[in-house]
Amino acid sequence: MRIKLAVLLLILLSGCDQPAPVGKGFAGLGTAASSFTPVVPGRLFSFPADHGPHDGFRIEWWYVTANLKDAQGREFGVQWTLFRSALQAGPPAAGWASQVIWLGHAAVTSATAHHAAERYARGGVAQAGVALAPFNAWIDDWHFSSQGRDALADLQLSARDKHFSYNLRLTSTRPLVLQGDQGFSQKSEQGQASYYYSQPFFQASGELEIDGTRYQVSGPAWLDREWSSQPLTASQTGWDWFSLHLDSGEQVMLYRMRQKEGEPYLTGTWIDAQGHTQALHASEISLAPEGTAKVAGRTMPVSWSIRIPGKQLDIRLRALNPNAWMDLRIPYWEGPVRLSGSHAGQGYLEMTGY
Figure 1 (spheres, helix red, strand yellow):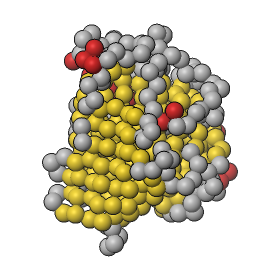
Figure 2: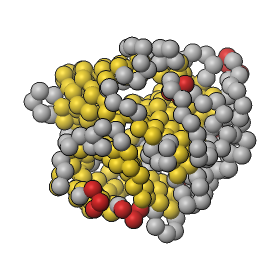
Figure 3: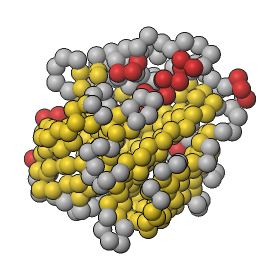
Figure 4: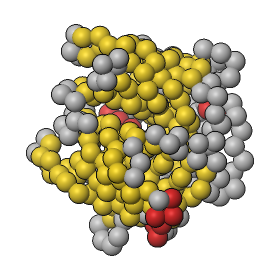
């Protein structure tokens, strides 16, 4: 899904030139944003332009996860996210007058450890941003940048903090995937939505360091790109998002938007090994938590069952590390998961609002 934690950008409003809007929905993401560009069906995506920022929209993110192993089979997860938030509609002003805020998140997870870090930047002063030709998304010394002419075919991903660092090469020859209805990704029955595309076919390799020990690692990686102006309703309290790499070569994206009352809004995408997509509707998906763990004083569903009968999928997910708690300014759970059942594989799970 990756309505992701653009929510986390909204917390920056309270520290800037104008007060935060009254919160509606989860962390204010249900607040009306009529002065910003609306998300409507029928958009024609244009690449490489859509890899860059979209000034008319309120929130946007570039998000990467990777499921990695070393030569001994030890498992790791990596997350890298850059969020862009506009404090007012219209083109951003130059220099310190810019009304754009940037936020970066990076994390590393193993079976026994989890570390997360965040970075903040004001727009307009070259501390953070996204550029094209060549593609480069950065905040401070964290980078997601192209190594060739094709913006998303060969990239370098890097971040570091006190307890971890990573430097990975991501490559893919597969097509990008438009999520939802040709990139129009609906989040509620009331029509809230984002524009959303992915590159789920990255292969990652490189070096990872965690708690002073270095590992040479490789494995599949997933990029999500989304932008919106009001992606939630006032009654939606959080979400559970899944990106799954099946050993068969197929990929699955699912999310459910939890509500104060009634059933969650549930949808997803089935991606075959060639990159062709099929939208998955709630009636075609069975998604339910199966086991919980106490994490940071909260009860978190860290194992799940997923059934998609039309695809003969009947699997169980469990967290590599149940304590993958992102203890940041607004905390949430995010980490790698293992798959078993009708299909083997691996993936990532994000849970907010618990």
